[in-house]
Length: 120
Image (cartoon, rainbow, N blue to C red; front, side, top):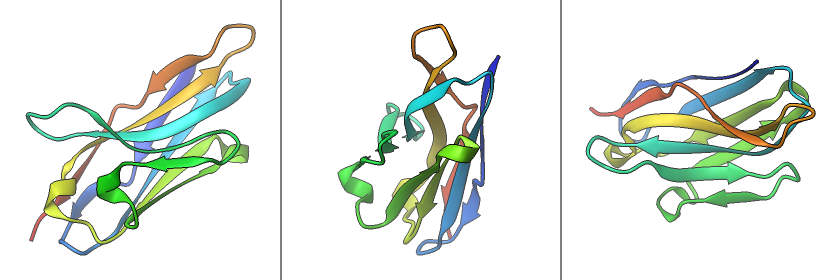
């Protein structure tokens, strides 16, 4: 009933930029928190950035000042603008959304992931 689909990953040189998008679709009543996580090979999945439905944002220390999360509630979409990318940012990036499908309780949905590779 609900799908969460990411786009925008790819290969970029160090210092470059990428913009990730994540759109939720289906029988959505409302969306609470939305966020981006990433998982590098051999490492645990970690929170990169999150944005609440009221607009409050949170960032991992490693990306503060370089990444910006935003959301368009009319489009059920969250974005991650990534600037000054570093090789350490290489990972699969996953979108996460807490979605209410009336009349059920909020449920966490994950996207399929998009690969971001930072390399010269």
